Amino acid sequence: MTLAQLELVESPVLEARVCIIGAGAAGIALACELDRCGFAVLLLEAGGLRPQASLADYYAGAASAPHPDPTQFRRAIFGGTTGLWGGRCVAFDPIDFEARAYVANSGWPIGYEELARHYPRAMSYCDAGRFDFTTAGSLARAPAVIEGCEADPELRADCIERYSLPTDFGTRYRAQIRRSANVSALLGARCLRLQKAPGEDRIAAAAVIDRAGRTREVRAEVFVLATGGIEVPRLLMLSDAAGAGFGNLAGHLGRYYMCHFENVCGRIVPHGAEVVFHFERTVDGVYCRRQLRFSAAAQREHCLLNSAFRLHFPSYADARHGSSVMSTIYLAKSLLIPEYRAILQQSLDVPPATVGAHLRNVLLGLPQLAKFSVDWLFRIQLARRKLPYTLVPNADGSFPLEFNSEQTPSASNRITLLPETDRHGLPRVQISWRVSEEDAEAAQRAFLLLRTALERSSAARLEFDAARLRERIGRSLPLGGHHMGTARMAAAPGGGVVDANCAVFGVRNLFVASSAVFPTSSHANPTLTIVALAVRLAAHLRRVYGGA
Image (cartoon, rainbow, N blue to C red; front, side, top):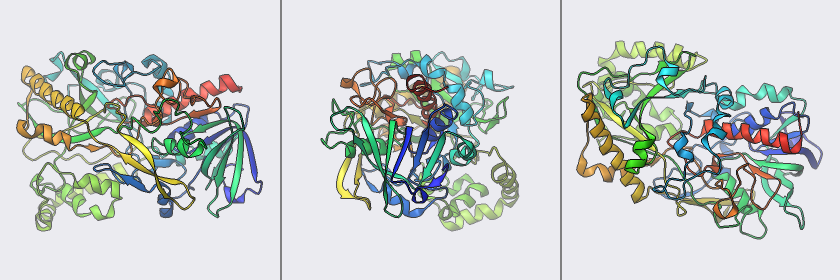
């Protein structure tokens, strides 16, 4: 019955010890960790093995600007959004788990060490190499990202981000689940709601529907929601007949919704210093890029959010970059998926150039374009480990500065349900999101501190329009696909929706494996930490519910 279509399963009732709802990075990693555990595991996925455009309706809803439409960066398919994942892997830092007085609602009920011991296993699932994000431990040759800046006491110039293949979990782990004697995956099985046992504090069954509209009931001792940060609160809300939502004992469900916010502000001009801009290979063969970050001490002293800075490429839309490669990509943007088209349309407050200007770049730079075409074929299309994306430096030797930052968890950023329903009668979602004044001011402080640090080192200067910096940061965009915090982890029901083991408060056999449980978001992309939490949850389920 592994990887079967639900409509081919004749039994109206399906049973397992553990039922996992959602087959993205979390659900598949959890299922693989429970392979050979000695009890039956059922993995449910609303999509199939191939993309199906009509299934985007499952995720349709409304969102406040500038948040993307709820259908973007979400896929109903075996493997979830790992099929369009860029592959960036970064671990959380110890400070991310602290209750910081200057970051409201911060603090995890577990410490960094508790999660760090599961990161190596998560790195393996993500095909991202060893659990090391330092230049000294990852690179054979490790100059600072900007020569000279490593001497500054407040800067961390030794940080890297690693990149996965990128690994599509649906493709990568399909064979293991197909071979498993105890794990079965059912495709086209959309969960409609969870059903509580009458008079008990446990889930008795999940109601699922196939694409033909036929319903089944899944009974299990343990249920795990392994959907994303938007779908988890939706299902917890609509499943509760009382109306409050499972785990919503203190009104936190759906609130504290976080995305990383990002922008490109100003530019770094090196003073003749060596600069590391392009992708590098780690000693274990993984692509990586450099970051500039602030030390934990500097974050505390200056009340900064955890953020990361990267040297960026010029705007695709601005033909003044003079690059035939970037102009070709810009002209071909109509062929890209909507999420990637939106990235190309971001600019540094410059109007897009005419088509003629881009065509001129292409014609004048045909040798550069030919070299890129060979790289694109052999390093991106045909390579198993792909070059993550194209990096073309500015013609004038300067580097636009990209940042992304965590958000302060705010109750006003939230997921709610609309009166409008989808084809299966499930309420659609409303997403309310914005960058707060406090967060924009913290990002502004970070830019000012970075400018000072670079001046101290004399390695480079950071230029930006000081009068417009605060306004520009306030117009930052949410990083697509990073949906976090809507079922936050806490030590007690008064502080969140799930406990330190990701069990839903008030429902003793329901767990969540998702970025929905993040109390804070760090600057780090969530996938690696999602997988680490899934590995940790699998160990917990084996201990509590039996298994080898």
